[in-house]
Image (spheres, rainbow over the protein chains, first blue to last red):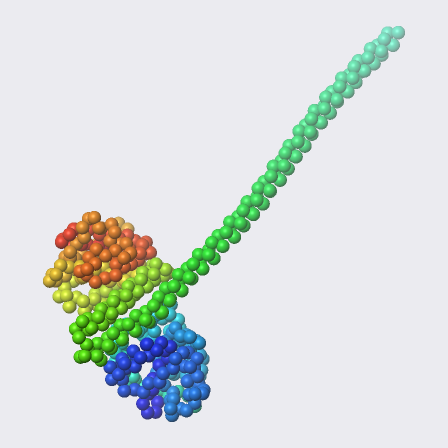
Length: 148
Length: 304
């Protein structure tokens, strides 16, 4: 992937987004973040539909952090859609959710998720989790995605 | 004339014989008729019996059909209730924890960003918000674990106890170090018939309790061991803790029972999870304890 990898954050909760932003700062996460607020917006972003058609402004992400329980289209629907797109098969998807139900974990992996993280309730714990994610992104080699 | 007389006599005799024969024939006909009538009565009786049997069978099959319908109806009702319960648990996992995360996260942020300008009382308030949210989160997590252990499909397979004990102790490593505890886990560890995630949760709860309920400034000493019995393996977790008075020992496994509420943190769900988990694996659970003399909790599982 050219340049710095972008992270696409998909979460419907304004509270969680604010906490995540703060935790990203605390974790000194100097990787560009993009935010969308439900599954339908996530799909529009990845397809490059309006208002996300400018790839300079809205670059394809290397990693998508995906909440599960969302209005419009939920995380499972996004996962199913992404894995059915030839160009997006290589996108790294990490579920970041409140659920730790075995059924959700199994279903997400069955649908082709790369990792499953549960949102911790403390901000410090969330920052610690994001620090691990930052380190993983830095040592990881990302493939390019075959999308325009 | 003699000849005529003889003939006459002969005729008389023949006539008599004929009469007797005819009488006999009548008798025989009557007997045959009566036998016939009896046979017919029997046949009709049998027919009636067969008819009654057929009716009974038809009724029985109708009743069986009704019962089957009733069972199907009840099963559908139960399935619906189960699904509702499942949806309820799902909602706890997803929706109820989100506002808690916000309360905890934002109270932490408040102290971090405005801590210098807040007086001690206000910092204390923020701390109380954060601690209460943390406690409620712990409650929800334990309730989810309890509901999972009650509902999850439990398939029993041979489980190596040594692996389970190692995984439990490694998860408690930080706790063990911080409390300066000594944990002795003496093998040999046999193989038991269990559901590994459930058994791990059960032994985790028992060991973490053993590390928790000790007197102030007493380093915990915990001993885990397995004992082979006729059909069962008894796994014991012994501690040098505060112990439990006999009066309270029968309520200790109940949901939300906390005997040392103020002194030790906890949700009162841990031992209910232990009991439910062991029950689901077809085993038994029990304890021996005396105040200030430590406790010994045990579970029994079938040999593999």
